[in-house]
Image (cartoon, rainbow, N blue to C red; front, side):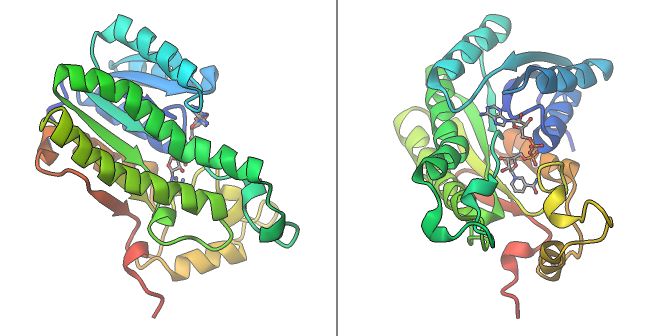
Amino acid sequence: MDYHLTNRCAVVTGAGGAILGAVSRLMAAEGARVAVWDLLPEQAERTVEEIRALGGRALAVTCDVTSREAICDALQTTLEAFGRVDVLVNGAGGSRAVTTTSEDLAFFDIDPQDLRMVMDLNYLSTVMCCQEIGRVMARQKSGVIVNVTSVAGLAPLTRALAYSNSKAAANSFTRWLAVHMAQTYSREIRVNAVAPGFVLTDQNRFLLIDRNSGQTTERGRQIMQAVPAGRYGTPDEVAQVIVYLASDCAGFVNGAVVPVDGGFAAYSGV
Ligand SMILES: NC(=O)c1ccc[n+]([C@@H]2O[C@H](COP(=O)([O-])OP(=O)(O)OC[C@H]3O[C@@H](n4cnc5c(N)ncnc54)[C@H](O)[C@@H]3O)[C@@H](O)[C@H]2O)c1
């Protein structure tokens, strides 16, 4: 498929990680210039080096997306290099053990400060990036936003309290912003979300595969029973759908939350 991304300028947050690294590489391979935003400079640099090794164009930008000031600084750096932003992919996010119930942590004892931290990471950071970069798109009268949420935001996962709730908020925000941008600023601005299912990455490997034995954990077995595809997804499989939504191929797709989950969200368990 030709995504027609040649010379488009993209900001990808969390682009030093597994899924958004794959998004950045694919966009660059399709001709886009990619601003690789990540909290960790070495992670951002690694993705940029991978892109340059393949002949693509990319810029590493260190940014903590939970800070509005940091977002503004990163945007300024990006605009100085690129002059515009055509695509924003909000990918930075994740779960935290301190907001996940366990034998050692009851729901009643979860610290509201920790809940705020995960809401900040998965929800408010997405809103703030959309505010600052959305302002640029409103001026340009065009742009595409893809938020990376989770199937945990469609129906909450057991134990993962703040993660599920914050991703649900990000899904709702996606639909709200799609309507708001089109009605208020330009019908040429689209906002969608991809809700990945279970992709085996460094972030969740310890939950799914026993470190010592290399065997699937009880949680991993439970997940596999609920995934009709019977396997984990790969970062590339998620990236392809994100890049599709960011491209003109999806010109009539707006306000959608697309599960990329091997059928997990469609399965009732019976
Ligand atoms: N892996 C999965 O199975 C899965 C499933 C559903 C949704 N997701 C979502 O996909 C996205 C990417 O997940 P992944 O598995 O590639 O994770 P990852 O841990 O490989 O990558 C996340 C990246 O985000 C960066 N980051 C963390 N906090 C940040 C901050 N405050 N500011 C800027 N960057 C920050 C990290 O440094 C890292 O490079 C996340 O939003 C995650 O919630 C992942």
